[in-house]
Amino acid sequence: MSTGAQFDADKEDISTVDLVDSRADAHTSSNVMLQQQKSRRRRTGKDAEPRTQHPSGGKSENEDLTKGDDSKGPIKLSHIYPIHAVSRGSILSRESTTPTPSFVGFRNLAMIVLAVSNLRLVIENYSKYGVLIRFARLGISQKDILYCIFLTATIPLHLFIAIVIERLVAIPTVNYVASLSESEEKKHSSPNMVRKGGSISILRPKPKYMWRLIVLLHSINAMACLCVTTVVVYNSIYHPLIGTACEFHAVIVCLKVASFALTNRDLRESMLNSQPAPAIYNSAPYPKNLTLKNLSYFWWAPTLVYQPVYPRSPSFRPLFFVKRILEMVGLSFLIWFLSAQYAVPTLENSLVHFHSLQFMGIMERLMKLASISMAIWLAGFFCIFQSGLNALAEVMRFGDRAFYDDWWNSKSVGEYWRLWNKPVTNYFRRHIYVPLVRRGWKSATASVMVFFVSAVLHELVVGVPTHNVIGVAFSSMILQIPLIQVTAPLEKMHGPTSGIIGNCVFWFSFFIGQPLGVLLYYFAWNVSMTKVKMVES
Image 1 (tube, rainbow, N blue to C red):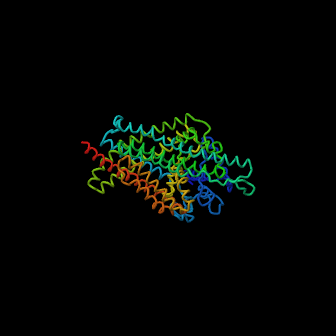
Image 2 (tube, rainbow, N blue to C red; image 1 turned 45 degrees about the vertical axis):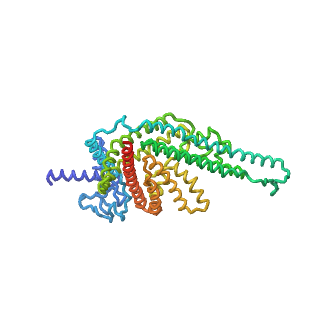
Image 3 (tube, helix red, strand yellow; image 1 turned 90 degrees about the vertical axis):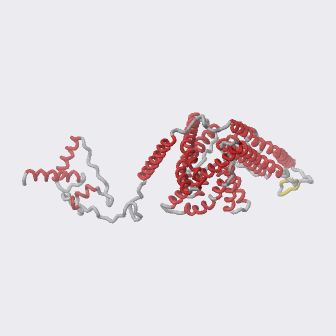
């Protein structure tokens, strides 16, 4: 054998031994060469060659390549190693026996595509319009500001009117219970008393004769809060942002007044029937809860549901509060920037398509507005529900801060409405849905009533500030009912794709519905403002 051939053979032997497991002891020469190889690696500082796990067995690929099927010793002809030894399905096929692969790479790709696409829109927008935002051009008149201050100061008065009404009915209630207790303590017979099972009960009627009057007063108070604000906003405030803030404030106070009245009514009923109230209310039982301090806390608490007592956090955290305030400031600026720089030009350019009824042009504007609208909505959601409500809860030391759940993973439209706005969901469930079901209403009918009330409030909050009560917000809420029925089976399905399909249906309806409503109301608002200017001129 020539010197070159001998060198090649030795090199092949070294490579082969380098792949053999340290436990293999079939040949003495292999063990000697393995020790030599290890010594050389220690001198050069190299680690041992990593071994990979073979999918079809517990042995590594290198070990399988150097051993035959009978495992009697190393083989030097690695080119005959069987690569295709077992039947396997493709990793994305249903018949695949491997675990479900991760799609993090595709998610990263989607994020990159989304970022690049929006960056192109940014460049295009800057090339066409430049910088549109101006700090001095908010378009808010002094008249709108004055009316906003007036409504902001007067709307909360309806809560204090509610406590006056409750104190009026609390007086005869307390007197009745006191007289009942006094009579039971005396334990003697009288014409107005009867003994039942060893206990004495009073036969005179309970003080419910005022309750219908109290219900009427509370109803007038709550409706006055909503109606007065609606009339002022519709007739006197022309900036949609200021009008929306005032109308939204009135809706919140109106709902709180109703919750305050309904909760205290049930507390009176429990007191008259000697039924125990929830244990959490022991520190403020009825009527000791009817104080200005208790009502003021409910006024500012980040909830729509009245309780005499709420869970409280241990202490105020200044750093947490400052972080939430900074988030609100930053997100508010982002919303304003996106609206002025991107949403307004898109809306203005859509007017010509609406006037000429160009369907394709309207669809193009709709698709372009969809991404901007979604970004603004998500920023607004985080600004209000995460930053704003948590900042307010920190100041008030409000303990229950479950303002939302993971609505972005909703498998159906119905699940989204249950998860995304917990304060409103809790309110409608406690004060509308559950009472109707207890009165004998079917669950589906009670749900329809909940969405009807919600639709009316949406139309007030959106239609009144834009001076166009055209029913788009109302119809969009009513249309949620068939969408919920259609997507409800997807929520109950089992399988890897059931949740994905339901979530995609929810996001698609959300992605298209939001900008469509914005386009319609913007067009109607411009038409109404054009008529107003023509009349004034």
